[in-house]
Image 1 (spheres, rainbow, N blue to C red):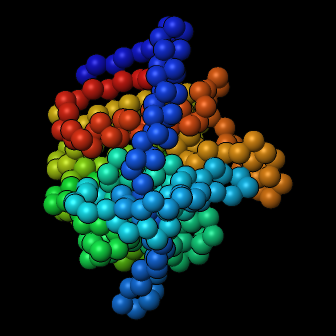
Image 2 (image 1 turned 120 degrees about the horizontal axis):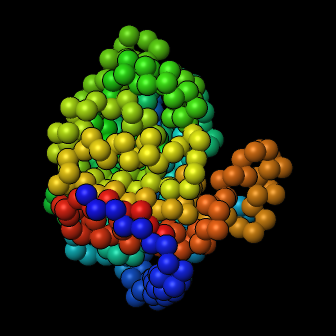
Length: 364
């Protein structure tokens, strides 16, 4: 394993300049590669778990884009609502948000990948979104990977609506609890007893706190479903963004994971989501040849969410005291947009050549 540290100020400034230019380049590229955006509701047979689905995709249009997921707190990303999809086949990426989040949280990533030719589908996971905290739905944690499978089904079934999906090119990206979700859909197995024992030793971990709140193994049936195989063999690569709950995944299932994995962690000091205890510990148990780990030193757990507007912290604190932290990155951090441009580059490189040799790095 190789660990690379960047400490020299000149080097940091050079990288910062490069990334800022990359951001400008992405804006220019966006004009030549328009993207569309559509939302819908996916119903199940019994209408017990309807899913909000949002899809970004390469489009054929000369219409002016508008900001998607833009509000008084978060900055949006440009796309053309309802635009016809571009011809040809495109790889698919499904995205899973964290606990208490929603599909808007990673709109910055979805938009960037769509400009690069990907179809990107994100869902709201019932019970664990910003506007749906129903305890019964949240307790069905094992449904989260199934939600992503339903999103894959929906996109594959409607090529005239979203574009055709390239054969055997389906990846999953998840943040926080979404990181757990995509690891499960890739083939990781969860042991509730193992996790409970570990949480007794690490009670301050955010994953332990959220898990206790959801109580997914509160019944024998729930415990069995949580420990079952939740994988979808159509998924060919996964990306975890500062995941939680990884310490409940079994060593055997991680060692045998059949798809390549990119694990990106926020490296800023954190009591409830320390990189060495969560993401780095996960990587130690994954296959060396098909795993890459990157720790971004100035990123926090919330650096993987949408960028905040100048007055965002004040507005958030007025309605939800203490939650203004979601707008804060690491001490002395680069602008969140620059951190996210780095993340986009890492994910693009990984998805374009998913079976890269193992390389663990700490970057800024």
